[in-house]
Length: 74
Image 1 (cartoon, rainbow, N blue to C red):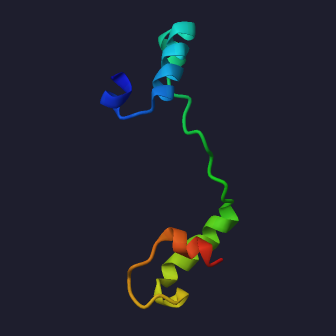
Image 2: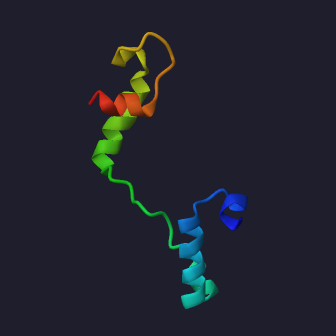
């Protein structure tokens, strides 16, 4: 019932309950994002320049494109 109300998995509820039982409220505090960006500053500079060129420079006929499509083409 709790998992359904919160729209999360039962396993997630069990993990959080166990953490609370073992470590109290402090154990429930966020430790930040699970993943750190894997792009370097140099890669970001190139990426930003490519985005600035717009979709037509990358073979798209209109403005409908996504970040995922651009990354796949590299």
